[in-house]
Image 1 (tube, rainbow, N blue to C red):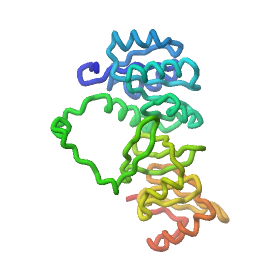
Image 2: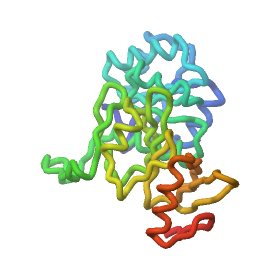
Image 3: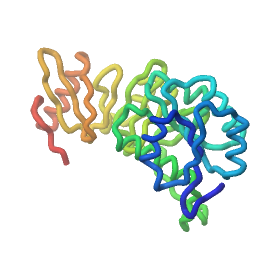
Image 4: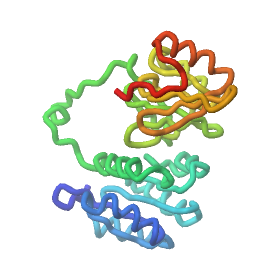
Length: 261
């Protein structure tokens, strides 16, 4: 793995405008080696060999043949890479391309920045005494779920989950610093999560109960839940009685702002 000081070397393949935006988030945290979004796998090989890249960032408005070829070459070379796409409708490509991670470019800047920084940190060997001794401790399995992301199984702590939303045949798990696209149904995920900590509010949405900041009444049989991170979700009609019962148990009237604490 090549390092520039304490910064990893990262190859980035992206269209000009998209590349400039991504670069603004991480230019001071890594050494970037830019290649054209029409580069060939051979050109990528040369850059990895000569520059000693620790990882790669593939970004595209629409993933096409070039991105697929580069992704395949990165996988063959066992170079971890992050896929940046504009639409969640292309997020399923993370599985097809076996990307280790992905980020949606339509998300807020802080979300994108955190996802990129987390990816860069994953490229740097952990030199802490705990890692060196091989005695890292983990939360018990009762505090986490295992999910399928790309071609890997990933452990996700309950405390890190803010919301889960359905996306066709997949589910998107929102964490503080990234989004995970997983091969799972909403029902299977709901069954694995503790009832006291997570609430199914819609056929397409599950939220962390502690993260609920506000419950609004928008009209007859129309309600909305807003989380502390600003994300808003509709409440399904069939799920509203459960939400209302939860509010009553907590002595919180609906339609007013909840404590932000």
